[in-house]
Image (cartoon, rainbow, N blue to C red; front, side, top):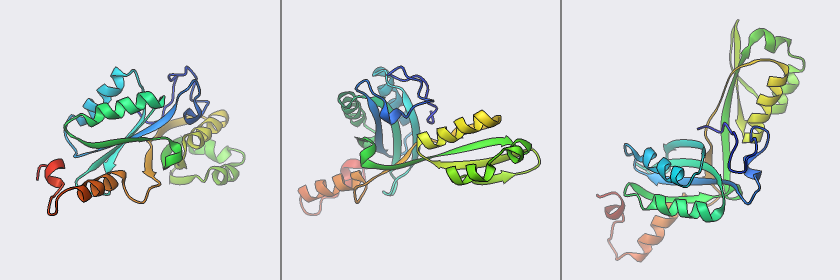
Length: 214
């Protein structure tokens, strides 16, 4: 599910365009879901997208800044009315603490891509040094048979490097991660929400009793 963009809701070939700029009234949204790491949770979330006929463009899961809480980062192309309904449905799941959605203007985000090419092809490639500087490529492995390198950036940058390489030589392997994203707010949005709830509770109330069953 990493950002291998094929035909999406707008019908465009998103290997050649930036999905964040997809028109037809739709754009790329990032959904962030906070939860304890429960078995089967990913399936519950993906069913909600499937029922709305939404393709998950990318997915990543990691620990959050809050101890014991995992963070699912999901991207999809749709309109704001639909994504708002999706988030409300996700929130109804018993294992979900809270979910949010953002567009790109609210986030700092990156993805990582890895490329494998034949060593001799890479050596014979004209303008190799210029290509490395242009895309800020980091070489991870080089041996007699292959060169493996990585590029970190946005989808148009990682895809742009792949497209340029494909025009000049054979790319033996290519993989791109799901999006990792951080909001521009001071704290995790879940932290903000819990802090506000705590202010509304009687003195001595522990919100973990409600969210974590402690």
